[in-house]
Length: 160
Image (tube, rainbow, N blue to C red):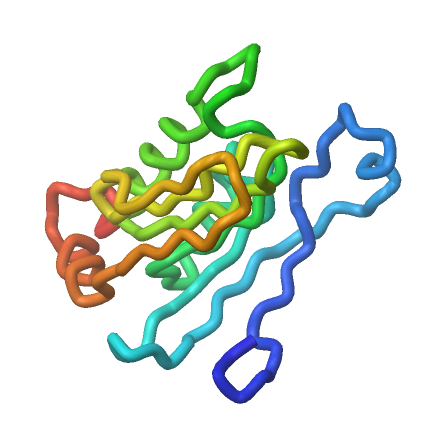
């Protein structure tokens, strides 16, 4: 919702988890969208992807093509303490941000459902902030002007 309470983004998860019986019954979404939001830092183009979508390049590519500068990711899985993969999901989000030249904020369920660790990374893939396992608010400042400058620099693949 924007500052007036109007819905500006609606997203259906595009990659449904095959290992979760209730989720398997859901129909996957087919597209992603972005919205321009007014913020204290000026207008910012926001995109959204849901949980496992962050592991598939098609969702990010669509959001980048549509001008996303920051991607929001509601998430439900261990981010740090996964017994099978450790913190590789955080590394994946950092790489996604760097390769796509945008900010990413991941909001995860706290313990005991998942391991919390909500976090945000900048357009260079650097972690701006990370929470703990407990329920808490995690804040991060994205610099839209810096993101836009980075998006125009020729050493990034995004400009090709």
